[in-house]
Image 1 (cartoon, rainbow, N blue to C red):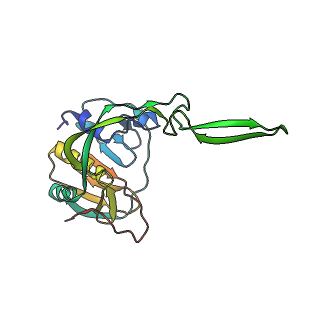
Image 2: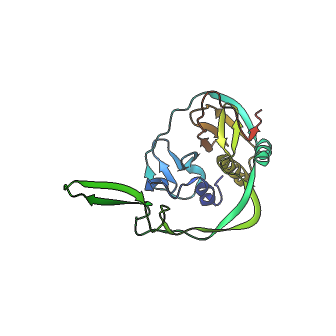
Image 3: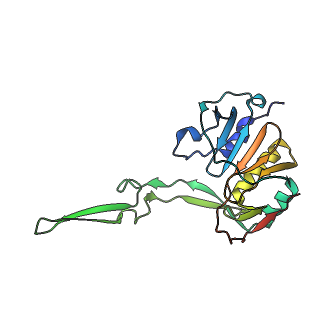
Length: 224
């Protein structure tokens, strides 16, 4: 069965600001014969037979998966963990920031001085125009009155820890496809974790890599 409104699903995982232009939009990965949409931490992989559009071709590989397992992650467990995470005020942007032209947005300027002996001295300082911010006009935001999950809250799933914002992407895909549980097939604390939604769709999440003794988190997703 074809996915309805596939663009809405794929764009959840895109990184519009990625320095590599081909990663800013979904693409057909010829190494895997799948359509991929990826940012720095989350990847969705979909077989073309359930999609209706064509995508630009590209080659990309990911880190080899480790620690195979066979666990079930339910939407109820995810919702419970997200509900336990700390919340912050939701804000919307009402005015974008503008780059400082004096320092070209870097926030720093250089001065050069030649002393009486003919020696040249260079030094780096905060830009005097923008005070080192790199912006001539600062971004302005407005509170919506709603509370949202803190993006850098930490959620534990088995052996791995993830930012809550990436677990939200997994939840969004499950809600979009009306899926109540997924299979966790790789669960390493230091390499990508794979969640199988069905025969045609998989999501891979990169965990937060901590020291061996790190066990602090804001919430836990219970596995079956």
